[in-house]
Length: 203
Ligand code: MG
Image (cartoon, rainbow, N blue to C red; front, side, top):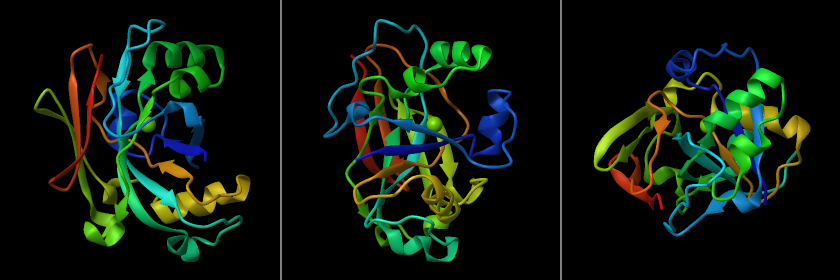
């Protein structure tokens, strides 16, 4: 299983980090060892002092595919979930300055808490889904999939040009505005529409 992730897919998040708007999807990977399941806790790593939450809609691939046409991309997934793309912003900043990859900043142990997956139809139109993140009961991030710069089907078609997509692969589809630091003791709850699907404590 691999995790493919897209950065800078929501305009207001690009602005908050003063990044450039991409003209094609910005792609990175997170290893299998980044996954946290079953609402297990996230352990704050000692190598960073600036871990940010990024709540994102997840898509799980159902069957193998490469060079997928965008108009057939919907045939390659039927389940979605929600996850947090934890980011060591200090390491990412250093990587940006030096032109280094984001492997550590985005791929460290436990950097990908994910929910269970549910049929797309449980939530309505995948192109118009509200999702959000609360930290200690306070809403910090709110997004809607219609605000994506690159749609889920476009992302799948794009990724499949370079990576053979396999059953069980997970795509992180980008975070909306409102990212910020977490601290030990925080409780993070992620929602699609009004359903709480993920609940992670920072330890
Ligand atoms: Mg992200």
